[in-house]
Figure 1 (cartoon, helix red, strand yellow):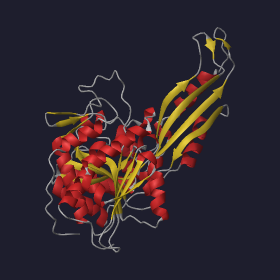
Figure 2 (cartoon, helix red, strand yellow; figure 1 turned 90 degrees about the horizontal axis):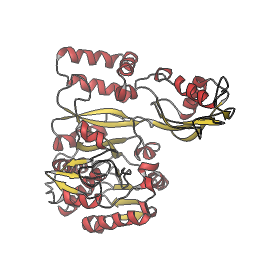
Figure 3 (cartoon, helix red, strand yellow; figure 1 turned 90 degrees about the vertical axis):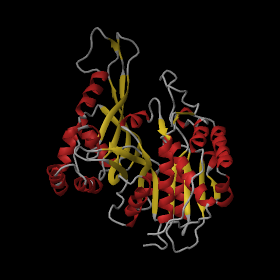
Figure 4 (cartoon, rainbow, N blue to C red; figure 1 turned 60 degrees about the horizontal axis):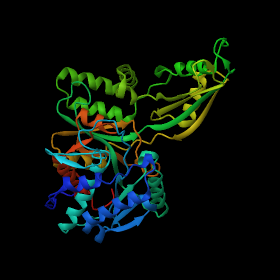
Length: 452
């Protein structure tokens, strides 16, 4: 690792630049016009002029930007920093304290849709590169900035960018995308803060269950209606019907937590769990919620349809299910398991969309150590802690091709802030944007001079 870092002053006004990004409503899920994304690209050009002058820009349609920062050596490793340009929609009746696309800066906070997901992390990458360029610094090896505009609706742009790099023989040594954050005590008995670094992400599977039935008047129903059949099928798909398994990243998380636990007794407990992965998986599953989701496939009915009137039996009924597939499982195996659990030939199970779980990135080599070292410069009290992401990111399209993809936004977020992602009153602290920029600067300067 590079031992001496160049002093890189940060420009003032990072909050105002993020506010300007928020003011461009790049809402993919609502079918935003491509012109909106073009406006954001133009604003980026205005606010980050050196980046656009010194880096090579390739467009992937109206919503994809790939910057290449040429390095000084072909022997040095390649890094890819990722973020996405699109945001999720806002319900007009949500009751935000500030209009969600006003980009209000108030009392040390930037408010608005995308402040955390993902324009805040996008800004800290852009700020770091602009500030490094102003300081006259350049990387040892090529650095790519990959920004897609459809992450919230599948990430086809990131898939195209990853495929293009792969076809050109580019082999990133490390890739960093959004994901975890710096949080307080992710598990009971841990003192201080943890930087939760996603080393893998679960697969995503959307299924439709459909049953046919006898239509007619509701006054004389048959023994099994289409609605009842679908209801029974959904009820059978309980969490415990899916196996538990302990991913390597979560086992390493237990070891890290044991090293920083609040008491000898708690340390011993976490060490014991880390040494017994099968037992640990069962303990995680019993806790429920996010803890259980790290060790098993989850299934959530999200949409139901059937019937047109209160006194009419529908001739068909449907349920849409969203599953997050556990590390080590597969789409095909999960579909087969759902069919076995439903155990009803009259219920049709069809796949609407599916994405395999990612591999697991290493936690015991120079790449994870690089992230931990950069954290020491930006958030010195945060412990670099691996975990498995439940949500999907654009990073999965890179992880299919390259082994070291990490998911981490270098911003401290309270539980309340994390709940506002995709929710109400999304906001980020200005001081965290400054620390996030410091993290990216440190990470880039610490990249090794040669591939290891």
